[in-house]
Image (cartoon, rainbow, N blue to C red; front, side, top):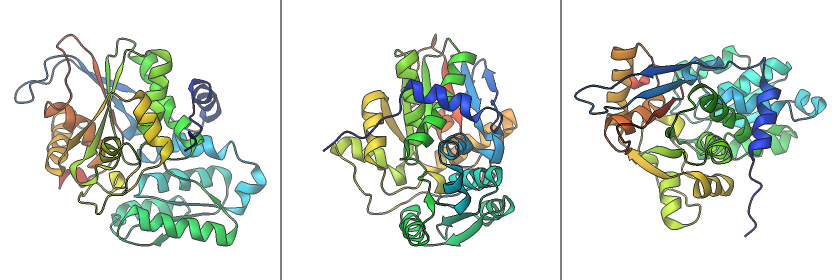
Length: 318
């Protein structure tokens, strides 16, 4: 089996220059200590990607991919499949380029998220119970109509764009020891981990998946990309039944470990983020915090941990 092309630090730095002016450099929030009952005594830093344009990190990757494509190809139209946030990112990219966009969503996508995609000017098509079925329909539609398909996590340019978060963390939190990142398909953690490995390899990168969508956790155990039989999480943006070779290889090379959290643990973390810090996150956006607050990420008292708060929303309060 051939090793897929893996984006590296040069690709990530090029992406940072390319997307400047189209995305926000999101702030970090330092929390001195997370007191009882959370039992996290050391310093924590939150990377606030919920303040990114469209409400999640996704435009970093979609804008980078957009700006690597010939304008005439983009003008024909863009197609993708999404649990919601990547669809918003592609809709935003289409708005930037004034190009038509079609986003395929699973039927479980919250209406508010679908409506937001439409408000960015994209057409929404519902297909199947999970992202994987929507993705198959999106690929078939793109091929039939000869349109450009943008993969949410297995496209090198998308991964490089997400990796710009890693550059910002290292610039704003140079003392960082551990970075905790939610995993859907693996594009976000792959980009961040590649940046860390190149610039500060002693930093441990920890991935977080829902117990009901342990796609890369099980793929790592099996030593190959596997397809889950079913999805059992309400965190729709973390609900891919299958990842891809490029994502598994990046995780294998650069990620320290993957831990699993329950939906209830993510809800508790989302409530904590709201009541303590006034941050409104979707369920997926609270995954990294859930892993830390439940003690599933080992951090020494003197270490600084950075949690990527990857998406805004209200479903985390359910």
